[in-house]
Every structure is written in structure tokens, then in C-alpha cells.
Length: 107
Length: 116
Image (cartoon, rainbow over all chains, first blue to last red; front, side, top):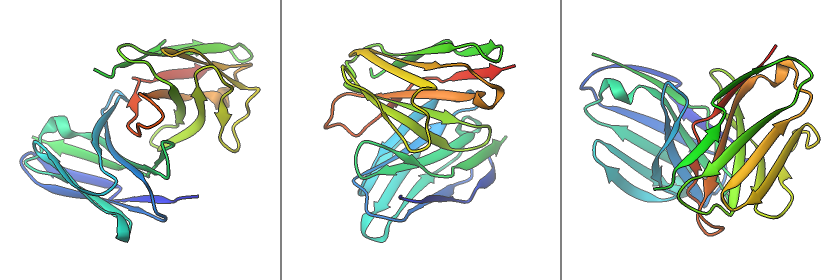
């Protein structure tokens, strides 16, 4: 099956800093999504991005499908950005979740 | 839009009992719903995919007789953990998608199950 690895596994930032999270996957996919899981466990959709670049406020994402990786950029981080970031991929609507990046943002 | 609810949010039960978890799409019709489990500090693992009106498709290694899934309507899917044991304690999360052509999934808030 498809393997999905995320890096770094843990990230500690001070408020205002920028960061880049990476997602590598082992096979071609038609579906790639980024999620933020808040401290209460709720998963929030960030991007549906099987290819190309998208931006939403302080967040942006880029997927290079031919090289099997995706990047999530967080600029001017805030304490509310804390939580776990997952990328999830799949050939279809079934998603395989990555290992996650745990982000802690301190004031 | 695209709100998914789960009930209950947390449940504690004795070993050997059965627990039912409900997943509802509140403002859209979900032809497909997915059930995941997540152990502490780990990723989400897909358990099964359910389509309205048909039997669920279980992932390899998931016991279909232990985790009963019913998708009786376009807005409701249920997961019943039968004869629960402490190793079934986990965070169970459902998600739903609009239609078969939509790859975007919307997630419920999760149900934390603790089996004593």
C-alpha cells in the first residue's frame, strides 16, 4: 500500500515564526488533503490539493505530484495553530493518513 | 456548511458490553461515510467505508463482526463495537463526503471510547 511520511515529527515555534511541513508519499495519488487536528481531536480541512499551489490566509500548500511530495507553509504562526497537521492521500476517495507533524506555538 | 456530528462524544463502558456510535451529516446528504480509529499520539487508521443502502467495506485486519456498521440513510451511519474489551479503547472518528465524485471528506468531532 501507499506509504505516507511527514516531517518533521515535532516542531516548536515562537509566535510569529514561519514553518514548512513536508509530506512524502510512495505512489501516484489522485487525492491529497491537508488537515489540522486541534487539541480536542477535531479534524479541520485545510486544503484539497492533489497538484498545484493554493493559498488561504496565512497558510499555503504546494503539491508536486510527479515528485510525490507536498508542502504546507504556515506564516506568522499563532498559538491557535498548535495541534497536529496531517496530510492524507489516496488513489480515490479512501484516504491514507500520514504520520503527522505535532506543532506547538508558544507566545 | 458540511457539518458532521458524532454522538456520544465520550463513553465509558464495562468489558463485554456493546457500544453504538452515531455519525450524522447535518447539512448535506452523504452517500459515503468513513470510520477511522486513532490511538493516542498516532495517526488515523481507516476501518471501513460505508455507502448508503449497502454493506460496508472493511479494511484488512478489521473484524466486521466486532465493528458493525450500518448506513441506513443519507445522513446517518452507526458504528457498533460489540463485546468491547480494553484494547478497543480508542478515539473513533467518522467522516462524510458529498457524493462519489467528491474527494473532500468532512470529519466529525470524534468519540472517545474507554473500556474498563
